[in-house]
Image 1 (cartoon, rainbow, N blue to C red):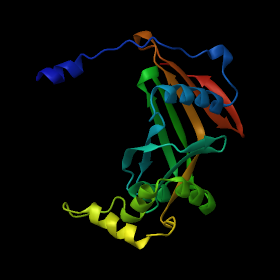
Image 2: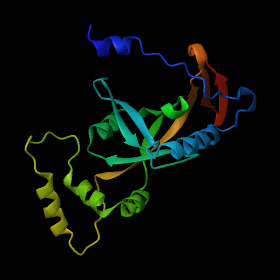
Image 3: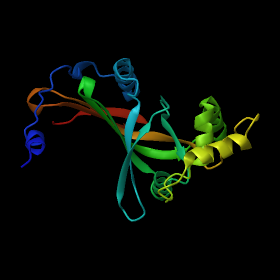
Length: 215
């Protein structure tokens, strides 16, 4: 076995920085998520990154890292190309899973919910707030399609810049947001001896119920 493989096999870290106060849990999981997200962003400017998992029409799972752009009591919002693989999966089965991992705090948040497109107006508002280069990039990229290895995106960007020269870059109709309405949110806090703290909120008749889970 190579040295690095042997190293992976024996990697150990005892989690002991924080714990969940089970006696003072908020009624709504968003309150705890808001607190954890704020703490994470103070340490890592990309703490809004999360893994989105979807399932294809052939029941094949797929995961990728995206960026959370908004959240409230209605759900968690991200943006993407509506022609992408993830969007095709969502059209087939709009139950998805989100996973946030913040190693600085030895924490995870696992969310299961239903993804639905947000309004065109809300997608337009967010698109207009993006840097112009990102707006043009949305027009250039046919996300997830097979392209030649020698594709020159610089040339494509120049052509798109010329097309919109002196004009506002409108949002492509195939690009926009999804909101994931949660039905389950689990907060995972690393603890010593792998006896981790876990609390899961589940939606029951429009009210959130919290349960502690075994490590």
